[in-house]
Amino acid sequence: MKKIGMIVGSLREHSYNRMIAQTIPELGLSEASFELISIADLPLYNGDLDREEGPAAVEVYREAIRRADGILIVSPEYNSGTPGVLKNALDWASTPTRTAALIHKPAGIVGATPGPKGTILSQQQIRQTLEAAQAWVLPFQKMYISQVMDKVDAEQGRLTDETTLKYLRRYVESLLGWIDQSRSLK
Ligand SMILES: Cc1cc2nc3c(=O)[nH]c(=O)nc-3n(C[C@H](O)[C@H](O)[C@H](O)COP(=O)(O)O)c2cc1C
Image (tube, rainbow, N blue to C red; front, side, top):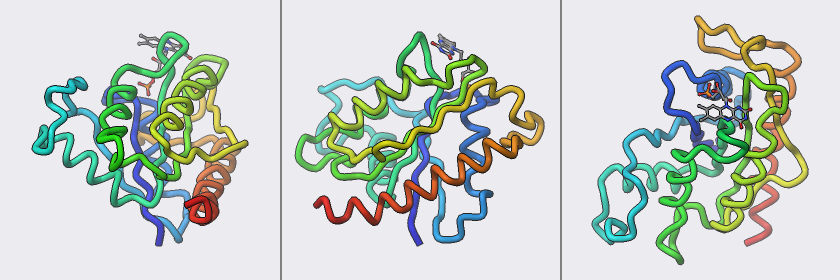
């Protein structure tokens, strides 16, 4: 059983990206378990706080990443880039230099927007940040969700569009396969 830690790049209660993440454990992928890793309580990154006995919320967050076999980022795009809250969270997981939680961690990226372009630009930046942190980002495959408001049941907080569900399932399956493949990269 592979453990996937999901990080949502939006703190909004009714976030579309959270709805996508909440749907993933219900895709029927029996070989995996899923955990939402909260970034809501992380302080702003400050090197002065980044000591052995750092902020408790940072320790909880880093430990959740460490125990996951792979990380799945589910994030919106803000001003053609990575939302600040997510960048902050990824920075906290990129230190200490030699033992950071993201080092050699297989990772995937999914993003949803009410707009037409599916978070292409933020995903490029998220990929760049993950690679700088030495995570192993699933190559080649991308998962962009545009016009998301037409593809969810907002009351239930779930993705309902059949085609998108099919592609999302395929993407998560690829991430699970990538976890096996990336073992040979070590
Ligand atoms: C500050 C800000 C900047 C935004 N910039 C973009 C953008 O560049 N591209 C885009 O597709 N949507 C943009 N949006 C719209 C978001 O995609 C939309 O608010 C979305 O619902 C946020 O994701 P969430 O529902 O998961 O919170 C922006 C929203 C905010 C608040």
